[in-house]
Length: 124
Length: 458
Image (cartoon, rainbow over the protein chains, first blue to last red):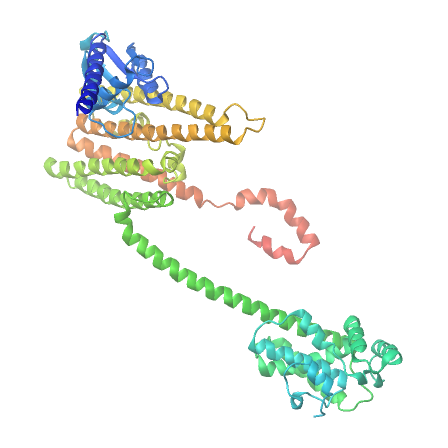
């Protein structure tokens, strides 16, 4: 009983840890991209920002301590449970924008640029 | 009818002596009996082996060597046989087998031909005629045992006719059997197709691997049909100047229609991404313009925009921005896909393309490659998402009337691409062939007259 409680507490602690780290990192820069170094879609989102003249802060989860916890926290934030990869996840101005499809949709409907300008990632 | 030798009767299985024809020469009769046997087997059981036939044809009674009126070649053979061992049936028979004398065979051919007509009546018409004519001639000439008038050439021809007739009967039989089985297969296929069509609607998300592509193709063709209806409605709505409210309904239907396709493709890509991304469901001309499994949004916009006039300043800016952001998104996706390809290529190549890798290594690399392939689905999904978003944004920027014209233009453009594919597929090709075939044709005309007919089309 105590063991199970301890395990559950352990999970919760890890989850808290992950979420804390995510939130901390997300608010450190105007544009933060949570990525995995080998992920091709992450590469695409990085190229998208670079193409717009934005240099995002990239957090490579496979190189970070507690990367797994952060990945799980991100999954919970996005509300995705499936085996598909969580990353890339984009934060602008400390606020969650979402995964690749959200970022693309935001760019197409013209809401991404104002958001970037507001966060100070884009000038002019 | 003379009774046959008992030995002969025993050799030839089963048939009673009365049936054996004996008002001809005995050799003839033996051969004739062989042919009769063969004919019966044709009529009843089908195909007899050549081996049996030859043995039957060339079986001879012991009295073979007595008759001097046979053709010389045959007589010499018979004489040698007679001198060595007149009593031995076996030797004679084996000798006859190896010699394969034409005379008796020809004689027997006519008789057997007659019998075959009676028993299995599908001999070709010309052969039948020939046989009746020859039969008459033979009857006339063989009524007396001396002074045979049988022409060796005629006999040879008769035997060849017999062979040809038999061959064509066999071919015909085989062909008919083939036709029958094909017919049965065809009806089965038709039933399966009907069943599959009926079930096709329900198979939507749960197809097996081999099935998914064909399910998607079916659903896509249905999607195209719906699209045609929408296009017609749009056209009519614009012509009759429907009020905006009604036009809006139609335009929304069109937008939903395109969303449906994205959904269909996403479902199919889960099981068979290659089918979607290589555009096997699209026509060749569409495939030429294929970008990540569909149309390229910025390119479509570039084509459509000039035809959307008149546009306000604001709308122009909005559309220009849309084109810009589409291009940026497309570029980003494309670079992501490139990196995917590099990574996949590295996995496939492994580290030992030249020296044969050990099985474990090979399988390891392949497994890695397969794991990476899962990412391809993500790219197709993002590309479809981009297409969807672009269409929605166009809808937002334009007025209802303009949006109706916009969707009409998009539909028409794609249907023209499909028409281009059909035209290209059915283009006349003689022009191409003529240039290369002319020297060949003349050559062939000189050398081989019969082939001339093949080139008459040019």
